[in-house]
Length: 365
Image (cartoon, rainbow, N blue to C red):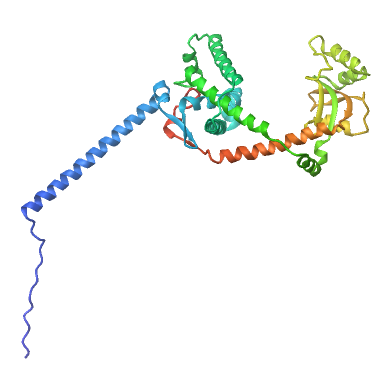
Protein backbone atom coordinates (compact mmCIF):
# COMPACT_ATOMS: atom_id res chain seq x y z
CA UNK A 1 0.00 0.00 0.00
CA UNK A 2 1.42 3.27 -1.03
CA UNK A 3 2.14 5.64 1.75
CA UNK A 4 0.15 8.83 1.82
CA UNK A 5 2.19 11.91 1.23
CA UNK A 6 2.12 14.36 4.07
CA UNK A 7 0.41 17.58 2.88
CA UNK A 8 2.21 20.71 3.90
CA UNK A 9 -0.18 23.27 5.32
CA UNK A 10 0.37 26.81 4.10
CA UNK A 11 -0.98 29.66 6.19
CA UNK A 12 -1.19 33.36 5.24
CA UNK A 13 -1.48 36.50 7.37
CA UNK A 14 -1.38 40.31 6.83
CA UNK A 15 2.09 41.71 6.91
CA UNK A 16 2.96 43.21 10.22
CA UNK A 17 3.30 47.07 10.08
CA UNK A 18 6.21 48.65 11.75
CA UNK A 19 5.63 51.42 14.27
CA UNK A 20 6.88 54.01 11.79
CA UNK A 21 4.45 52.78 9.12
CA UNK A 22 1.56 52.96 11.57
CA UNK A 23 2.40 56.56 12.45
CA UNK A 24 2.66 57.50 8.76
CA UNK A 25 -0.73 55.93 7.97
CA UNK A 26 -2.37 57.72 10.87
CA UNK A 27 -0.88 61.05 9.76
CA UNK A 28 -2.15 60.51 6.18
CA UNK A 29 -5.62 59.74 7.50
CA UNK A 30 -5.68 62.89 9.59
CA UNK A 31 -4.40 64.98 6.67
CA UNK A 32 -7.13 63.62 4.38
CA UNK A 33 -9.77 64.45 6.97
CA UNK A 34 -8.33 67.91 7.49
CA UNK A 35 -8.29 68.55 3.68
CA UNK A 36 -11.92 67.53 3.43
CA UNK A 37 -12.89 69.92 6.21
CA UNK A 38 -10.96 72.79 4.57
CA UNK A 39 -12.57 72.07 1.18
CA UNK A 40 -16.00 72.04 2.78
CA UNK A 41 -15.26 75.34 4.50
CA UNK A 42 -14.03 76.93 1.27
CA UNK A 43 -17.13 75.71 -0.57
CA UNK A 44 -19.27 77.11 2.20
CA UNK A 45 -17.53 80.48 2.07
CA UNK A 46 -17.88 80.62 -1.73
CA UNK A 47 -21.56 79.77 -1.44
CA UNK A 48 -22.03 82.54 1.13
CA UNK A 49 -20.17 85.04 -1.07
CA UNK A 50 -22.28 84.12 -4.08
CA UNK A 51 -25.47 84.39 -2.04
CA UNK A 52 -24.37 87.79 -0.71
CA UNK A 53 -23.52 88.99 -4.21
CA UNK A 54 -26.78 87.75 -5.64
CA UNK A 55 -28.66 89.21 -2.73
CA UNK A 56 -26.98 92.53 -3.34
CA UNK A 57 -27.45 92.55 -7.11
CA UNK A 58 -29.39 95.75 -6.69
CA UNK A 59 -26.48 97.60 -5.11
CA UNK A 60 -24.06 99.88 -6.88
CA UNK A 61 -21.08 98.12 -5.31
CA UNK A 62 -21.96 94.87 -7.05
CA UNK A 63 -22.64 96.45 -10.45
CA UNK A 64 -19.57 98.67 -10.36
CA UNK A 65 -17.21 95.73 -9.94
CA UNK A 66 -18.66 93.15 -12.34
CA UNK A 67 -18.74 92.67 -16.10
CA UNK A 68 -21.95 91.59 -17.73
CA UNK A 69 -20.20 90.31 -20.84
CA UNK A 70 -17.15 90.34 -23.02
CA UNK A 71 -17.32 91.28 -26.70
CA UNK A 72 -14.38 89.92 -28.63
CA UNK A 73 -12.44 89.95 -25.39
CA UNK A 74 -13.46 93.53 -24.53
CA UNK A 75 -15.06 93.69 -21.10
CA UNK A 76 -18.49 95.29 -20.86
CA UNK A 77 -19.25 96.47 -17.31
CA UNK A 78 -22.68 95.64 -15.94
CA UNK A 79 -23.34 99.36 -15.57
CA UNK A 80 -22.76 99.87 -19.31
CA UNK A 81 -24.71 96.82 -20.44
CA UNK A 82 -27.60 98.05 -18.27
CA UNK A 83 -28.16 100.95 -20.67
CA UNK A 84 -28.54 98.58 -23.61
CA UNK A 85 -30.91 96.42 -21.63
CA UNK A 86 -32.97 99.39 -20.46
CA UNK A 87 -33.33 100.84 -23.95
CA UNK A 88 -34.39 97.49 -25.38
CA UNK A 89 -36.72 96.83 -22.47
CA UNK A 90 -38.66 100.03 -22.98
CA UNK A 91 -38.68 99.75 -26.75
CA UNK A 92 -39.86 96.15 -26.78
CA UNK A 93 -41.61 95.35 -23.52
CA UNK A 94 -42.84 98.31 -21.55
CA UNK A 95 -45.75 98.97 -23.88
CA UNK A 96 -47.26 95.61 -22.99
CA UNK A 97 -47.18 96.24 -19.25
CA UNK A 98 -48.62 93.32 -17.32
CA UNK A 99 -49.49 91.61 -20.62
CA UNK A 100 -45.85 91.22 -21.70
CA UNK A 101 -45.64 87.58 -20.66
CA UNK A 102 -48.94 86.62 -22.30
CA UNK A 103 -47.93 88.32 -25.56
CA UNK A 104 -44.23 87.45 -25.75
CA UNK A 105 -44.04 84.35 -23.56
CA UNK A 106 -42.46 83.67 -20.21
CA UNK A 107 -38.97 84.02 -21.69
CA UNK A 108 -39.52 87.67 -22.64
CA UNK A 109 -36.45 88.68 -20.60
CA UNK A 110 -34.29 86.42 -22.76
CA UNK A 111 -35.75 88.19 -25.80
CA UNK A 112 -34.79 91.58 -24.37
CA UNK A 113 -31.27 90.33 -23.65
CA UNK A 114 -30.87 88.94 -27.17
CA UNK A 115 -31.66 92.34 -28.74
CA UNK A 116 -29.54 94.17 -26.17
CA UNK A 117 -26.68 91.80 -26.99
CA UNK A 118 -26.77 92.68 -30.67
CA UNK A 119 -26.83 96.44 -30.05
CA UNK A 120 -24.07 96.22 -27.47
CA UNK A 121 -21.97 93.90 -29.62
CA UNK A 122 -22.09 96.18 -32.66
CA UNK A 123 -21.29 99.34 -30.69
CA UNK A 124 -18.38 97.74 -28.85
CA UNK A 125 -17.01 96.26 -32.09
CA UNK A 126 -17.21 99.51 -34.07
CA UNK A 127 -15.92 101.56 -31.13
CA UNK A 128 -12.93 99.26 -30.66
CA UNK A 129 -12.15 99.34 -34.38
CA UNK A 130 -12.38 103.13 -34.36
CA UNK A 131 -10.01 103.45 -31.40
CA UNK A 132 -7.56 101.01 -32.97
CA UNK A 133 -7.65 103.13 -36.13
CA UNK A 134 -6.81 106.26 -34.10
CA UNK A 135 -10.23 107.83 -34.63
CA UNK A 136 -11.61 110.28 -32.07
CA UNK A 137 -14.98 111.92 -31.60
CA UNK A 138 -15.65 114.79 -33.96
CA UNK A 139 -16.67 118.16 -32.59
CA UNK A 140 -20.24 117.40 -33.62
CA UNK A 141 -19.96 114.06 -31.82
CA UNK A 142 -18.75 115.70 -28.61
CA UNK A 143 -21.59 118.19 -28.77
CA UNK A 144 -24.03 115.33 -29.28
CA UNK A 145 -22.71 113.57 -26.17
CA UNK A 146 -22.96 116.76 -24.09
CA UNK A 147 -26.52 117.30 -25.32
CA UNK A 148 -27.44 113.75 -24.28
CA UNK A 149 -25.91 114.29 -20.83
CA UNK A 150 -27.78 117.55 -20.33
CA UNK A 151 -30.99 115.96 -21.52
CA UNK A 152 -30.53 113.24 -18.89
CA UNK A 153 -30.05 115.89 -16.19
CA UNK A 154 -33.28 117.55 -17.28
CA UNK A 155 -35.09 114.23 -17.39
CA UNK A 156 -34.14 113.52 -13.79
CA UNK A 157 -35.47 116.90 -12.66
CA UNK A 158 -38.68 116.42 -14.65
CA UNK A 159 -39.20 113.18 -12.74
CA UNK A 160 -38.72 114.92 -9.42
CA UNK A 161 -35.15 113.74 -8.75
CA UNK A 162 -32.50 116.44 -8.38
CA UNK A 163 -29.64 113.92 -8.10
CA UNK A 164 -29.15 112.54 -11.62
CA UNK A 165 -26.97 109.69 -10.32
CA UNK A 166 -29.77 108.54 -8.05
CA UNK A 167 -32.21 108.85 -10.93
CA UNK A 168 -30.08 106.68 -13.23
CA UNK A 169 -29.52 104.08 -10.51
CA UNK A 170 -33.26 103.85 -9.95
CA UNK A 171 -34.46 103.98 -13.54
CA UNK A 172 -31.69 102.06 -15.34
CA UNK A 173 -29.79 99.92 -12.89
CA UNK A 174 -27.79 99.89 -9.67
CA UNK A 175 -24.44 101.58 -10.07
CA UNK A 176 -25.52 103.57 -13.12
CA UNK A 177 -24.56 107.23 -12.88
CA UNK A 178 -23.79 110.22 -15.05
CA UNK A 179 -20.15 109.19 -15.44
CA UNK A 180 -20.86 105.78 -16.95
CA UNK A 181 -23.81 107.21 -18.89
CA UNK A 182 -21.37 109.60 -20.54
CA UNK A 183 -19.05 106.67 -21.32
CA UNK A 184 -21.98 104.82 -22.88
CA UNK A 185 -22.91 107.81 -25.04
CA UNK A 186 -19.30 108.39 -26.10
CA UNK A 187 -18.93 104.77 -27.15
CA UNK A 188 -22.18 104.76 -29.10
CA UNK A 189 -21.41 108.06 -30.82
CA UNK A 190 -17.88 107.09 -31.88
CA UNK A 191 -19.15 103.72 -33.08
CA UNK A 192 -21.77 105.50 -35.19
CA UNK A 193 -19.24 107.96 -36.60
CA UNK A 194 -16.93 105.10 -37.54
CA UNK A 195 -19.74 103.29 -39.33
CA UNK A 196 -20.91 106.42 -41.17
CA UNK A 197 -17.37 107.29 -42.21
CA UNK A 198 -17.01 103.91 -43.85
CA UNK A 199 -20.42 104.21 -45.49
CA UNK A 200 -19.58 107.62 -46.89
CA UNK A 201 -16.32 106.30 -48.31
CA UNK A 202 -18.08 103.72 -50.49
CA UNK A 203 -18.21 104.61 -54.18
CA UNK A 204 -19.41 102.65 -57.19
CA UNK A 205 -18.68 102.91 -60.88
CA UNK A 206 -21.40 103.52 -63.42
CA UNK A 207 -20.83 100.00 -64.71
CA UNK A 208 -21.56 98.60 -61.25
CA UNK A 209 -24.69 100.74 -60.99
CA UNK A 210 -25.90 99.70 -64.45
CA UNK A 211 -25.26 96.04 -63.70
CA UNK A 212 -27.36 96.17 -60.53
CA UNK A 213 -30.14 98.11 -62.27
CA UNK A 214 -30.29 95.64 -65.17
CA UNK A 215 -30.69 92.73 -62.75
CA UNK A 216 -34.19 93.97 -61.87
CA UNK A 217 -35.33 97.21 -63.54
CA UNK A 218 -38.87 96.88 -62.16
CA UNK A 219 -37.46 97.23 -58.66
CA UNK A 220 -36.54 100.81 -59.46
CA UNK A 221 -39.81 102.04 -60.95
CA UNK A 222 -40.71 105.25 -59.12
CA UNK A 223 -43.86 107.34 -58.90
CA UNK A 224 -44.31 110.92 -57.77
CA UNK A 225 -47.57 111.78 -56.04
CA UNK A 226 -49.11 113.66 -53.14
CA UNK A 227 -51.16 111.90 -50.51
CA UNK A 228 -52.95 112.64 -47.29
CA UNK A 229 -54.35 110.08 -44.88
CA UNK A 230 -57.84 110.73 -43.53
CA UNK A 231 -57.88 108.60 -40.43
CA UNK A 232 -61.29 107.18 -39.57
CA UNK A 233 -62.97 108.65 -42.67
CA UNK A 234 -65.82 106.72 -44.26
CA UNK A 235 -65.87 105.93 -47.97
CA UNK A 236 -68.54 108.57 -48.54
CA UNK A 237 -66.52 111.23 -46.71
CA UNK A 238 -63.28 110.35 -48.52
CA UNK A 239 -64.92 110.32 -51.94
CA UNK A 240 -66.55 113.66 -51.12
CA UNK A 241 -63.12 115.15 -50.42
CA UNK A 242 -61.64 113.63 -53.61
CA UNK A 243 -64.50 115.07 -55.70
CA UNK A 244 -63.52 118.60 -54.69
CA UNK A 245 -59.94 118.26 -55.95
CA UNK A 246 -58.94 119.53 -59.41
CA UNK A 247 -55.42 120.87 -58.76
CA UNK A 248 -53.03 121.32 -55.88
CA UNK A 249 -54.78 124.42 -54.55
CA UNK A 250 -58.08 122.60 -54.36
CA UNK A 251 -56.28 119.56 -52.87
CA UNK A 252 -55.11 121.80 -50.04
CA UNK A 253 -58.46 123.44 -49.41
CA UNK A 254 -60.43 120.18 -49.59
CA UNK A 255 -58.20 118.59 -46.96
CA UNK A 256 -58.44 121.68 -44.75
CA UNK A 257 -62.21 121.75 -45.01
CA UNK A 258 -62.35 118.15 -43.83
CA UNK A 259 -59.61 118.22 -41.18
CA UNK A 260 -59.98 121.76 -39.90
CA UNK A 261 -57.18 124.14 -39.02
CA UNK A 262 -55.02 121.36 -37.52
CA UNK A 263 -54.20 119.98 -40.98
CA UNK A 264 -50.70 120.91 -42.23
CA UNK A 265 -50.13 122.67 -45.52
CA UNK A 266 -50.79 119.91 -48.04
CA UNK A 267 -48.30 120.67 -50.84
CA UNK A 268 -45.35 120.05 -48.52
CA UNK A 269 -42.29 118.17 -49.75
CA UNK A 270 -41.49 117.03 -46.24
CA UNK A 271 -44.92 115.75 -45.36
CA UNK A 272 -46.97 114.79 -48.36
CA UNK A 273 -44.99 114.64 -51.57
CA UNK A 274 -43.67 111.19 -52.41
CA UNK A 275 -41.15 110.06 -54.98
CA UNK A 276 -41.03 106.43 -54.06
CA UNK A 277 -39.86 103.13 -55.46
CA UNK A 278 -42.75 100.75 -55.93
CA UNK A 279 -41.55 98.63 -53.02
CA UNK A 280 -42.21 101.50 -50.62
CA UNK A 281 -45.61 102.61 -51.91
CA UNK A 282 -48.72 101.60 -49.98
CA UNK A 283 -50.20 98.53 -51.67
CA UNK A 284 -53.62 100.08 -52.23
CA UNK A 285 -52.17 103.30 -53.60
CA UNK A 286 -49.84 101.39 -55.93
CA UNK A 287 -52.69 99.24 -57.22
CA UNK A 288 -54.67 102.38 -58.03
CA UNK A 289 -51.71 104.04 -59.77
CA UNK A 290 -51.00 100.99 -61.92
CA UNK A 291 -54.63 100.03 -62.60
CA UNK A 292 -54.79 102.38 -65.60
CA UNK A 293 -52.65 104.93 -67.45
CA UNK A 294 -52.38 107.93 -65.13
CA UNK A 295 -51.99 111.62 -65.90
CA UNK A 296 -51.00 114.44 -63.62
CA UNK A 297 -54.01 115.57 -61.64
CA UNK A 298 -55.72 112.19 -61.35
CA UNK A 299 -57.25 111.87 -57.87
CA UNK A 300 -58.57 108.94 -55.85
CA UNK A 301 -59.73 107.96 -52.37
CA UNK A 302 -57.94 104.70 -51.53
CA UNK A 303 -59.11 102.53 -48.65
CA UNK A 304 -56.56 101.65 -45.99
CA UNK A 305 -57.55 98.40 -44.29
CA UNK A 306 -60.98 99.76 -43.39
CA UNK A 307 -59.44 102.27 -40.97
CA UNK A 308 -59.44 105.34 -43.18
CA UNK A 309 -58.61 106.58 -46.67
CA UNK A 310 -55.63 107.99 -48.53
CA UNK A 311 -56.48 110.93 -50.76
CA UNK A 312 -54.00 110.57 -53.64
CA UNK A 313 -53.04 113.20 -56.23
CA UNK A 314 -50.96 111.67 -59.01
CA UNK A 315 -48.10 113.63 -60.59
CA UNK A 316 -45.93 111.38 -62.76
CA UNK A 317 -43.80 108.32 -63.21
CA UNK A 318 -40.18 109.18 -62.55
CA UNK A 319 -38.03 109.00 -65.68
CA UNK A 320 -34.99 110.80 -64.29
CA UNK A 321 -32.20 108.22 -64.51
CA UNK A 322 -30.00 110.18 -62.12
CA UNK A 323 -32.63 109.73 -59.42
CA UNK A 324 -32.90 106.02 -60.23
CA UNK A 325 -29.10 105.68 -60.16
CA UNK A 326 -29.15 107.22 -56.71
CA UNK A 327 -31.59 104.53 -55.54
CA UNK A 328 -29.47 101.78 -57.09
CA UNK A 329 -26.40 103.21 -55.37
CA UNK A 330 -28.20 103.06 -52.03
CA UNK A 331 -28.85 99.35 -52.56
CA UNK A 332 -25.21 98.72 -53.46
CA UNK A 333 -24.11 100.67 -50.42
CA UNK A 334 -26.50 98.76 -48.14
CA UNK A 335 -25.16 95.43 -49.38
CA UNK A 336 -21.56 96.54 -48.95
CA UNK A 337 -22.26 97.80 -45.42
CA UNK A 338 -23.94 94.55 -44.48
CA UNK A 339 -20.96 92.51 -45.64
CA UNK A 340 -18.51 94.88 -43.89
CA UNK A 341 -20.48 94.78 -40.63
CA UNK A 342 -20.72 91.00 -40.64
CA UNK A 343 -16.98 90.70 -41.27
CA UNK A 344 -16.26 92.85 -38.22
CA UNK A 345 -18.83 91.20 -35.96
CA UNK A 346 -17.40 87.77 -36.75
CA UNK A 347 -14.34 88.91 -34.79
CA UNK A 348 -16.41 90.12 -31.85
CA UNK A 349 -18.52 87.31 -30.40
CA UNK A 350 -20.37 88.16 -27.20
CA UNK A 351 -20.11 86.00 -24.10
CA UNK A 352 -22.07 86.59 -20.90
CA UNK A 353 -20.55 86.68 -17.45
CA UNK A 354 -23.13 84.75 -15.43
CA UNK A 355 -22.46 86.58 -12.19
CA UNK A 356 -22.42 90.02 -13.80
CA UNK A 357 -25.66 89.34 -15.67
CA UNK A 358 -27.46 88.79 -12.36
CA UNK A 359 -27.36 92.53 -11.80
CA UNK A 360 -28.83 93.40 -15.20
CA UNK A 361 -32.43 94.52 -15.30
CA UNK A 362 -32.98 93.79 -11.62
CA UNK A 363 -35.61 96.56 -11.49
CA UNK A 364 -37.97 94.74 -13.88
CA UNK A 365 -38.17 91.47 -12.00
